[in-house]
Structure formats: C-alpha cells, structure tokens
Amino acid sequence: MKTTRRGFGTIALGAAVGAVSGTTVFSQKVNAQTRAQHAAGEYDNGIIQLNQNESARGPGPNTMEAIRTHTTRRVGRGYSPDHVNELREGIANYYGLSTANVELATGSTPLLQGSVRAFCDAEKAFVTPMPTYSTSLSTAREIDARAIELSLDSGLGVDLDTLAANASGAGLLYLCNPNNPTGTVHGPQVVERFVRRVMRENPDTYVHIDEAYINYCRPGAIETAVPLAMEFEKVFITRSFSKAHGMAGLRVGYALGQEQTLEKIRNAWGMGDVNMLAAVAALTALEDKEHIAWEAQENAEIRDEVIGFFRSRGYEVPDSNTNHIFVNLGMPAAKFREGCLEHKVLVGRDFPPLEQTHCRISLGSREEMKIALEVFSKALA
Image (cartoon, rainbow, N blue to C red; front, top):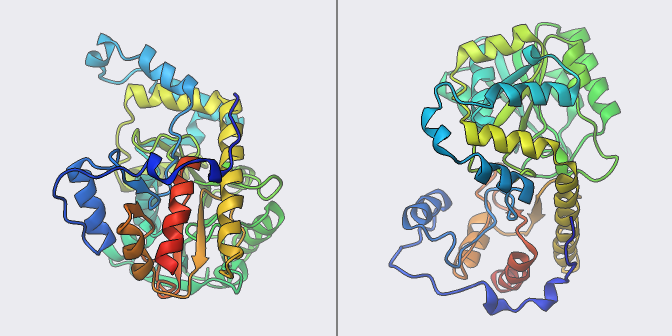
C-alpha cells in the first residue's frame, strides 16, 4: 500500500476547518460536548476529533471492499448472522489456538465488564493502576466490589511490582499494555516476570492484560501475552478491532484465554452479537497485514512529529506506543480542552489524578494534526 509522505507544513489551516452549521451549544464538559456533537451530526462538518483514540483513517481498502461485497439481501436473513463462526476460527488460527480459546464480543467493553463481574465482589478486590482505561473500574464501582487504585511510577508507567504486591486476596488485576492514557509500555520479559510472580504467590487471582493498542507499538517494544494465557488458567487477554483496524463503529472485540475462564466471563455478562458485516470486516482486517503495517507506520510518523512539537516547547511527553500522547501541560486539562474547543478541536477528557496537569491527545490524520498543532499553539499561549 502506498502513501504520499507529507510534512504537516504543506497543508493549509483553512482546508479542513470549515464553518459549523446549526446552533449547537458546546458544553464546557467534554462528555456533554461529545453527546451534543453526536446529536447534531457535526463530526464531519469541521470538527477535529482527537478525544477518543479512534483511527482517523478508518478501515483499510480491502476491509471496505469486503463490506461492500457482502452488503446484499442476505443481510436481511441474518439469524444467526453469517461469518461469525468464520471470524472465531480465523482469530483462533491467527494465534494457533482452538476456537474454545476465543470469546467474541461487540467491542472489548463487554469483556471488561464481564470479567470484573465474574471475578470481583465486596471481598475480592479489583486492582488497577490509575490513570488507565477505566471501564473495569467503573464496573467494579457499579457492583460495589472493593477497588484498589495504584499510582503510576515516575515515568508514568504501570508499576508492576506494586500491582503484584496487591494481588493477595484480589479477584482481578488489570494491566493495559500499552497503557491508556499514558502510552507507556512494558516489554515481554517484564510482563512475564510479573505474571509468574502473581501466579506463584496468589494463584487464585486473575490477571487481565488489555492489548487494545498493541498494533501501534514501536518495533521490539512488546510481544503479545497470549502464551502466558495458554499456560495459566487465570490469565486472559483482550483485543479490539476499534483502534489500528479502524473499526470503532462496527464494534468487534475478543478475548483469548482458557475455555473455563472465558466461560465464566461470558456467563457473568452479555457479550452482544457480532453482526455479519462486522464479522466479515474483522476477518478481512485481521488478514490484511500490509494495511496494518502501513497504519502503524503512518501513526508512528505523525506521533513523532506531534511529540516533537510539544517537547520543542518544553512540555514533557512520555514516549508513546499508541495512537495518542499524554502531555504534561502544566495546566488543567479542562482549560486546554476549552481553548481547543473554541477552534473546533476536541481533545481528551480528564484522567484523575493527573487532570490538573496532563491531557491526552489522540492522533488524527496528517491533515487534522497540521490544523490541530496550530490550535494547540493558540490554546497554550
């Protein structure tokens, strides 16, 4: 797949920021603001969306063609939907596993919710670093499970020693690797040492490793922990087609683990039903190694330029292995968000306990980031 490499400087500011029609009132609170934008249908009318870690480039051309090809009258007779079993088999073959080791869901969210409901309660704690992806923590609070929140290390990475030290009596430990929102990552030897320590010292505690952003990692930075999930019953992995595969709107995710563990997660919470077009798209995307390599490279080049923009101005940014960065702006995220919103650029929500200093910024397309960098300069002035 070919692409024209262009620096941000060649794209005019006015090219993509058009006037937004209508009378939407933009809330200062990012969640209300996002709902308002969805209701008004304005995301494709001048709004640059750098707040939800989606792929600005969307699915690859082969995936789009597969969706078009399979959009026939057969969609009207989709009980049960075609191609879902093929997707399960395709994922199993991709990792060299059995289909019993694969649990499909409508995005990874039901898997995160189900795992907390399956393994945590008032006695068995959910243990998580903070800030990190918060769906599991929110679920723990919903069911009144005990929750233990741990600080990151000085480099904004997950402190695996502290996480392992809190495993005693816990129901579930959560590790997002690479981490959202910080973008930091742990390599395979470190993760393996962490898992083996937990399994040795607290064999009744489950470990969830969320690899949603693994396709965006720098070369050599990470390896999947699937072999550990196949070795230990209490370890499982989740993945998503919403990030590098560009399919956030189609809602496909999956878990990899031992059959009895996946059964407990499935029985604790509904996984949803993956539809036939989503299944076709996911299977095509999984097999399209050329496109995923291009997507990772495109994101890496944009990421390096954006990180360089902030670092050259004295702002601290950890090395990122995702499609977002986490910047120490020295100001509340809300203030920066409001400044960007005035110019129709959305950036990330608050991430306690660092919301007074740091902001997460998702990486858009080259065109979008050219405009966004000019907006950032204004918001930081």
